[in-house]
Length: 343
Image (cartoon, helix red, strand yellow):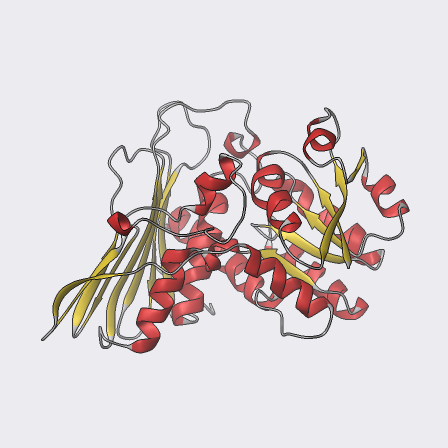
């Protein structure tokens, strides 16, 4: 049994981490760091609630620490835990700068600890379906890949740390890591990056929308997010020389977690109404069943990597690439130009 300490019981900790960790065989949610309030003890009475990182590490038997706190705190918390000999998972983004991320990766390497970033959306059902479709190749060589996170929240939340002007805030660092990670998994490192990182809502103080283009030799990957899409566009649009694939709707797991639904055998199953459509030369248009999504697989992989039974799926090197991409996006947007990946 691997004992897990969860640092932070805000939206990310209580929604995306605690219930998933508890549902994974071989992991025990040993402790939760909640600085105030008693929500954690009510929802997870089997876990020890602590008020500081010192108190958590003093327990002695916490093997894996999950950092699900505001972005500006990721680096110091993760560094403290790695130096104390604990494996660490950090909620995306990795840190607020590539230099910080590189330092953590080096510490983990020297200490021989597992370090990973929570890229749970690799295990979205729609992304799993896209991976399968591209590996099987019915669309032929891909010329355009477009991926959106379209949401609608016209009102700014002035008390939310994600909407304050500070390092790591804004929608680029919130949703960008998912879209960039998925594109890099599918297509590898691009030659160039071009981005428009912008503010669309009148009262917003930090970016709340972006459009990023990754340039590959024979194709483009366009990644977009906005908080002002009352009618959402397609989640995925992919065009190849032999056909196209279009998929609407977001993976069902986030809503299920928000509603507190049990993680059971029917977890991550999407209604047929939301299945994507593939239209290929000679075959016509057909519905493509969405594979079940399952965020447990992320933590199952971390468990297996700690035990030495599997290679880590989300590596520090991959997380560093995402951090580099985020910084290139900001540079491109600021300078209004296309920037070379290796430049």
